[in-house]
Image (cartoon, rainbow, N blue to C red; front, top):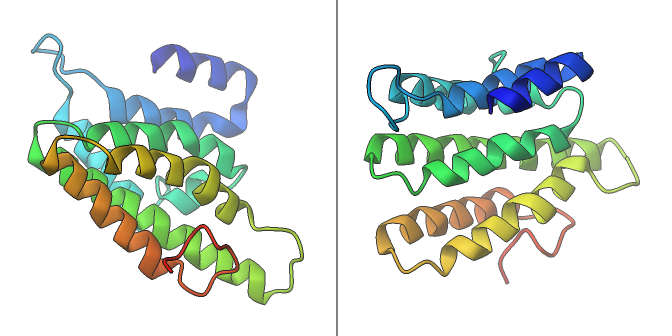
Length: 168
């Protein structure tokens, strides 16, 4: 994460905020070897879930929604953590992402934009494949988080033009 942060900072100044987010999500504890800094990770996940914050999904996507993918992957990874607080906070952040994506997709559709919304593409190409993989997990506790997130996707995305984002 630190190498990614340095590369993005040097070559893509606009990506500084997303690289800061990724570094904060992956920060290791300074006192315990091999353990996450839960305060940093949970704090960052809580900021992602807020609607109006510098570290929110909407703010981080100001340049491109494609840059959100590494942070999305880290959030999905945290769903597998043994610490229940981290996993639940990660689920809350991912639910906030789904909410923002659905709202932005509706906004672009109602404004008459002909091309498919970048948020819809993000959901279809990045989030749904990760969800599909998680639903097939053997660990029922982790699989429950994936199912809850899928329920959120179906509820939030009902009425959007994409046949991939709502239930039958």
